[in-house]
Length: 243
Image (cartoon, rainbow, N blue to C red; front, side, top):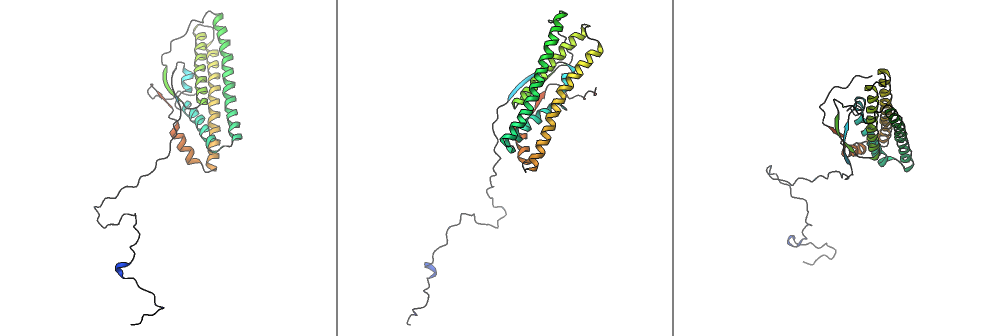
């Protein structure tokens, strides 16, 4: 037979090129066949520096400031602000918030130093510098210092505790009346409590802005990973009644 020159030549089945190998495992109908589980990648976690600082609080009104209801929210707010600024803020926005926080902490520190000097002079006048009361229910904490602002706020609480001890000394020695004693302590407790609340309010505003920019999940993840808070050796107790 004369071959047709226009016909397409055929390749015998035995000479046809084999298909390229497929790396995908062959499917099997065997229900007992085992497949290698797919490895999921865990989110990357930064290794951040922290101080685990042991703290002892003596006076009643300083104790109330480090209660679960007040100190932990303030610490969480300060750390959360650092996280949010790092994730969503421009350099100008971060500088503005940093200035607000640092100014508030610095002003309180200066006020506490001034009051401490006045109390020192008063104790010296009545020969009470070497006298300090014993407290029946001090508490021991381990505070996680995860940012400079948390460290500064913790220092303010400790400074307040020393102020309260001086005021208690003057009261127990008969220098201050009951009314003066209570008024002084409540006034200073409220100053630091108001500062903590201002940080909480600022954090709420920044968190809402992060949510508006679609960064809520990232902020939540970073905040949970970075801050554990503080431990206390004191058993859980009821909150004191408001003054």
